[in-house]
Length: 313
Image 1 (cartoon, one colour):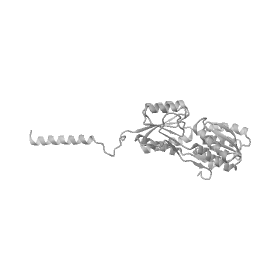
Image 2 (image 1 turned 30 degrees about the vertical axis):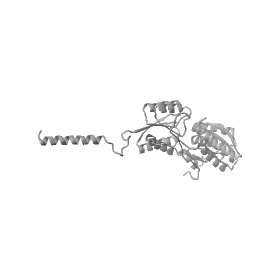
Image 3 (image 1 turned 90 degrees about the vertical axis):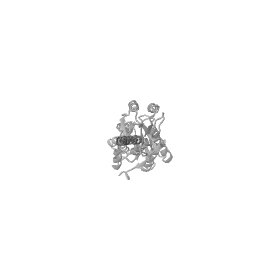
Image 4 (image 1 turned 90 degrees about the horizontal axis):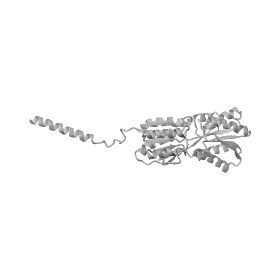
């Protein structure tokens, strides 16, 4: 073999060795998940409620910002539907499942199934009463009831008759919003009487129907406190139809767009803002931390704010 050919062969061998060596190294700043898209399943209780529409819209924007592929499924307030949807997420082997449970008891089976599949679970707004959840994002629901009670006491001068529209029976949010409201009245306004407290399942239509019955039975009613804005807006409709809006003040929770408009127009006295966009944004940020092996807070309570006509704008 001539010296020229030998030198050429040697050069080729050295070049190949260099290429192999380079390809086996990963740049120090390259993330292990760089070539793998993070996929998150978001199981929401119902998109018939504007509160959760706001949450979904915020989730879409935040997921795009973080480079997360977000799969959102609407259970339409059916525990059975939600269980099947989460089973679908598990089959697809999503990286994390975020759940807004239809029912805190019923969702436990699905959470346990996700646990068995080694898929981390985050819950928002409503907790799961069984199974392992890495993080739960919510508000202090008792405080929400207290804030409405404080404003109601102020508006009524510490005297009057009040009706309550309750959310889903047994739901932690319903239980706590009721306790916060009622206990505040007991401690700060013995002159205010809760004359009736009925379930309207967080529904605007049911809120309107139940309010019609309440108005017929209570001709001297001074206020209505609803566990959410949908029921409060249903109450507004029935109170207006009965021609009693000038005599009955209405309070809600969520600060949805419709409710804030109602507060501005004087149709509602107040609502409590619980920032669903901040809840879901925090949950999605936690997703990336969890997948990196970082520790996240077990419970995150999002700050509340009372909305009245003075600050509704």
